[in-house]
Image (tube, rainbow, N blue to C red; front, side, top):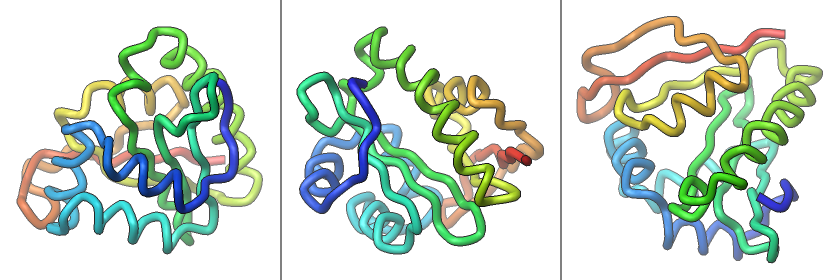
Length: 150
C-alpha cells in the first residue's frame, strides 16, 4: 500500500471489478444487493472515500465513512497477498482512523464472521467486537458488530 489518497470513480470501477470473493459475499449477505451495487451505494453515500493504492498508485482497496460514522473497506486480493501491503495497511489505517475520530465520536459497522483478514485488520486498528449475530443482514449470516470510540 504505497499510500492512502482520495478515491475517484476509476478507483471505484477497478475495485468493484476486482473485489475479493469474501468482500463480495459480505456485501451480498449484509445488503441483499449485488456486490457492485452495494459498493457503489457505499461510495456514493460516504462523506469520505479513500483509495488504498499500491506502490504504482493502482487501487487495491477502497474505504470510507458514511454519515454517522459507519466505516467500511473492501479490497482486491493484491492487498492481502503482499505482506508489505498488509503491514502498511495497519500502520496507515491507524493514522486514518485516529484522524476520523476527531470528526466522528464513534465509528462502527458489521463484518462477516468469515472475513478473517478484515477482522484482524479491525482488531489491529483498535476496534472492539461488541456483539456476535448468528443471523444478520438480508441473508441471515453470521456477523460481528464492531465499534471504535474516541
